[in-house]
Amino acid sequence: MIRLVTIFLIVSCVLSHDLSKEQLEWKQYYRIGSVFSASSDAGISGYGRLKRTTRYTFRDIRFFGHFFNKDTEIRIRQKSSRRFLTFESIYSFNTLLYEKNTILNVNLRYHYNQGLGWFIQRSKSGNMTLEAGVAFDNSDYLNNQQKTTYGRGGLSFDRTMKSLSTKFEIDYYYQISQIIDSSILSRIQILSELQWAVNSRFGLMGGFTWDIQEGDSDPSIFLTISFIDPLNWSL
Image 1 (cartoon, rainbow, N blue to C red):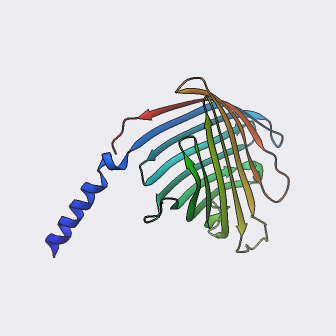
Image 2 (cartoon, rainbow, N blue to C red):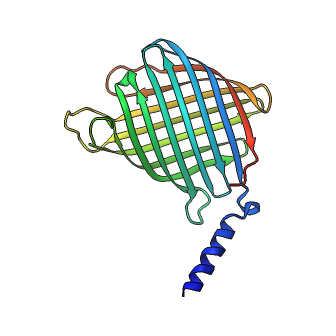
Image 3 (cartoon, rainbow, N blue to C red):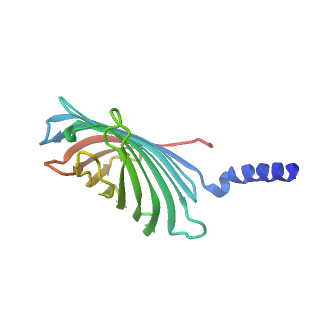
């Protein structure tokens, strides 16, 4: 029995690292530039991303930062997804996020969500996806351990047209559980980007992020120089 289990594990590991079947691809992305928000002032925008894809899986880690004179917006996100069983258009996903947003008085938000996604459209020029699931977070992670539960829905769209590419993402978090101070934490998060590719590696990108929550909020508008480069990693 032990021998059979050992053989099974070895075979599984070998097959899981068949790069010719996985079509493994690594990419790195970086951006630096300026950002402006009516809620704060002008500042510096920075972005970094490492992405790993195969035919059946997607993993990435992303850093997104806006640094103003008095305020800070930072997001560190890790996402992993895998095609669901034999269905080509359906995938499962989970996301882990650490976020700081002093404009919205969020000192440190620890956030996790998971669910299923659907490729509404998939082609070489771009994708459109729809996601639904549940989410959990703690919006005051440094001071208490009380978590909030949400229902989450998300829509993303990206398209490439010669030297121009665009991306739009919108996420809606509907608060299910109530917290002691009766704060309303339901929110909409929007990301929109438009990039002009100077060549295969460098480009000029503009866009905005917008967290719409209870109270006043304004979008953060950024203009950055972007860099993208494939990585010859076999991990």
